[in-house]
Amino acid sequence: MIGWAKILDVTYPLTTFAARKGFGCYFGPSRQGWVPGWSTGHGYQAKGLYVCIRDKENRKADKTIVFDTGFQPPQLIGQWVHYAVVFDREQQQEVFVYINGKKQSNTLDISAVKGSVNNNKPLEFGSLHGWKTKGTLDEYRVYNKALDEFEVAAVYKNHLV
Image 1 (cartoon, one colour):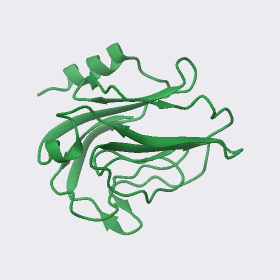
Image 2 (image 1 turned 60 degrees about the vertical axis):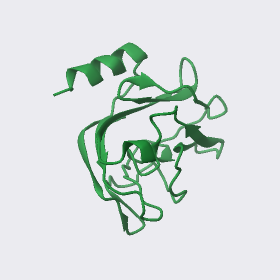
Image 3 (image 1 turned 120 degrees about the vertical axis):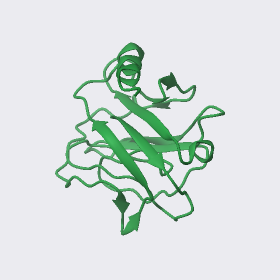
């Protein structure tokens, strides 16, 4: 999942962008990004992105992926920021986060999640259980494969205007 976000305020409780329907995972992105999957409610993470992926057999992997210094949510308020969250279930079996083209140091091991993560939830952006995010999303994309660091960099560089 790749896109641009401009967050103007992180003072609202439990606000995230949301994206659902068939993505089969969910993550509460520190109010910066988007949330595909079943359910969230994990709230604001000042240092990074809470990611949780669960298969139909209820095997899951979850943690807060702490962003590198200079890329943490409070440090980016009011700026257009490019986010890429890559779920690589086949090769490296990890979740990677890229911010403005830079791969963050921390990852999430998702090797325990073996089964299907499909679901039939509706698609939704910009709210979570009634909470709204004060910000804007632009050029949101979902790919049917895990992009590598060169592909993420190309998408980021080709969209700098």
